[in-house]
Length: 264
Image 1 (spheres, rainbow, N blue to C red):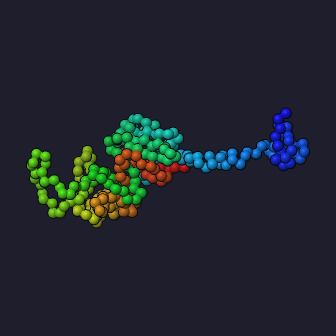
Image 2: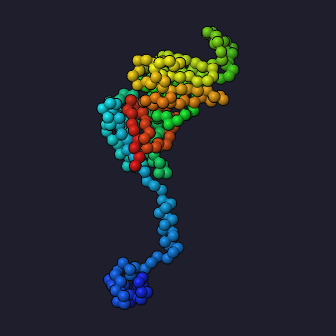
Image 3: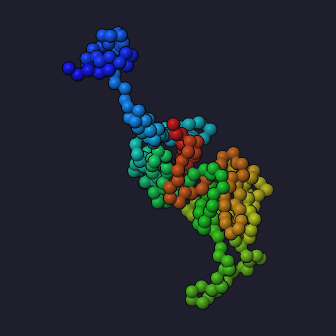
């Protein structure tokens, strides 16, 4: 007959008995204790297990408050105008397949899928910018251009471009991008910083209701160009190049859809 040891008195008890015949201990005290090594191994396994972080996307609808919520319970979640599990069929600025929200190593990421207009994320702090990078302040889209030092004197065929001579060697310029990709307001600087806002800045947009007085700043320091928000009310957004990790409370623009990230 198979027996186990009572934890209370140490006497043998036949398997299946609900009480110890010697001390009367109940069935909970008749289960064999795991060895110390086994208990330690089980504890280590639980502590080292990765934490699962599920998230949802909350669509913001301006002054009307929150809109639809999309729960991210799978590994990948494609969003677009016509393809994917999260669709924005009425937004013509969204590509058929725009972006992918996915989990990796217990964290949530977003990756742009070579969309026409790009996927934009709200600045958390200061980010570096490269030639051709785009960012959004208020309702305005901007593009950064940097210039080599020194500028080339001639094209490949030996001819020089005929234009207005610069008063100083420009390091960068910021250009407003209008509908259909046309260029709007533009400002170039040699060094220091360039400010964007509604009034009293280097680039001013007094008619933009979502633009703060001083909204954002593009700076040049030690040959590096950076973008930072200047404490604006609605934030500054930059186009992500590939993929980026998301945290609770982040904001992402997919076309004209503003999305808040909520991670449980």
